[in-house]
Image (tube, rainbow, N blue to C red; front, side, top):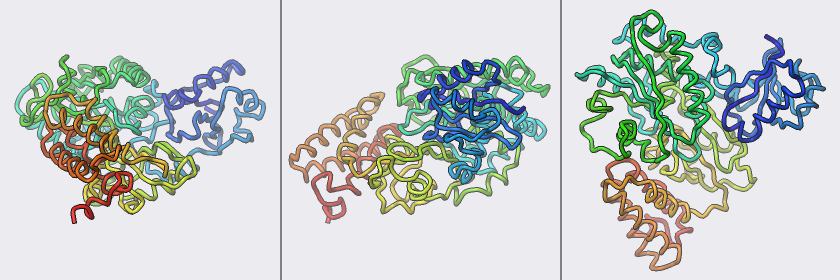
Length: 514
């Protein structure tokens, strides 16, 4: 239907005035057909509003409430000319270069309209899964090469296969939506902009492994996502896509949202399970693995939002379609989130293999400040800092590991040449000290001692000896911590010390060792 106006209700757009723009549109033109969508992820253009025309959607942005009268006068309803007119969003270079599979509907559909979701291919994946049967569905996910998008990169299908084969009932599907890494927002975008795809992905997972109940663990800082998920779950339940006989298949599955209190450590899968069970989130020793003894002591699949939200397109289009994208053991696409001091911040979904330099310089457009890029942190607050010398590194799990880095959740945070890398290293230790669950000594005490050692280095006290002590402390945390919080904290510290030694008043680590 032409003439419809689309205004994002995504938290990123709302933060820069999307609600005010929507209110202004309805105030100036009460007869408008206005749809609140998710964001397309071009954050420097938000609020980005669109109008449906015979030639497709036409975008305008960034729009303020004050721009609305002028836009309407210029013929907004028909895609009229205006200084803010961007043309078809799909033709913008930032979107045109992407391979949108997981995020194909984000910014396009009404996230609270099941008919809209189905009109854009929704539930085709579940329909094919039902026709294949549980075993073949599971094998399709294995053959796709999909790996966990939460950070560890473990093959999703292998995890499912383990749970399917584990004795015991009931079994559970747990979605880890505790997105807490700095510079990351892909989970939030899916939950706010296309929640039905997550519901469908969890339902397919339940069907494949024999689980009848799912939980989505969302951090309390995501109120928009929580509301969107609860609304979508209620709609799916009322229309037969959740419940006792899904789509007349005889399969029963239901989902519940659980809200966390914002503890970073609850992003670790076993601490998350403790929190769902109503206990303080603390890391469990492994084995046993959650696939054998998970939620309430039962076999449990724990996957990240993006992993589960990618399953429907794999089932709908076939494993080969997904597997043919990417490089090496990193198959398919990754939603890369560009943030920090970057000109074109936002979500860029692309096949694995794009280089860090392409992402920062070409796609991201360099720094927003106009100064030189000095460092890029990939993988959240526990990710390594990469200098420009490593910008040829392809976005690939193994390539980043070979460069002593982590892809993590796909966040890329850019820093210009004013950054103090010693301060960034100190922050990593401080972050770990604050967020540690306290269960293991290397993380609990090591991070606190790390803050103290960094303070002495920054004051110029016995720099060489304290640098050596810092390296030793990082080794202890890396290999002695119970989970990735303490185990990964050394990555930003050692990478800063290795690549930016001048900020630590000393030569590079290898020179000091020589």
